[in-house]
Length: 412
Image (cartoon, rainbow, N blue to C red):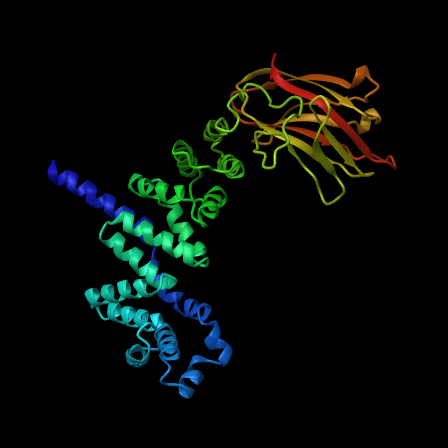
């Protein structure tokens, strides 16, 4: 039993190592030149470090920069030896030259002197926390020793002190959020509201590797009183929809709209004006061809307003449905619309496999006070549907315009 438990723990650590490290060592070497050029504005202003070093070889700062650049360029053993010699000489002239310390640390690591490399990296970190490659090495070393708190601490330092680290570290950290040990440490880190926190949450909502994991992570954050902006929660709903995970999407959608009922459409009176609607909310659609579509407030509640120039048509409004099999009625009321029957807008319910389940025409406002109604049948092979309002192209010079004051799709 103990052997099996130990094996599981070892496997867990191994998985965590892959998740957290994410090939950081290899990436760090590749980024060496980029990192050094980003941190050397003053040296580059004077010309290349090589020329500056030739002019002032006793300036430890310039020597340290040159050493780092030579070592990161990976020109072979001879060049690395030269870089190490310059780095040592630079530290004699300038003991606080961080690039020189980092150069020697990487050189020691490459030569297999791990204990010496760690000592140097720790010293580099003590001198300055703005050296990204030092933080990357310390992250990897912490993971190697299964020290998750220390790894997250260095993630925090790297992300706070080096904005370019976002692109490098966010994908790796995003893949780790489902690990309970990592979450346990990450939560208090995010609770301190670091400058990178909101950007990381936004990254998860738009680019996270698994929207199901992201939804679970956001639930845990909210449970721990950490604010997740609604735009990011909506982003996860839409990511789940895009992955055809409709039931998961609905379950998470209900954390935003707790009163929502999947047996009918939502917001019949257009009362919600959302900055970030999900697929389950009314979503106005506009186009470059002049179609306009907006949800507007009125004295009573709200209204959907649309217009299209002459000869232009298309989708102006839609909402995703997850209706169980059965018969449904669509009923509502329009205003302003005045078109021939052939040019009248219409509602259509489409199964997500592309099948059309029926249409309901929107009459002129003068006809029965703009009221409209119709029925649809949803079968078992259609678990998700989209309700859309379509504007037909009109030959009228003024085009098509109108408003929908009320619309509801519900079981018969």
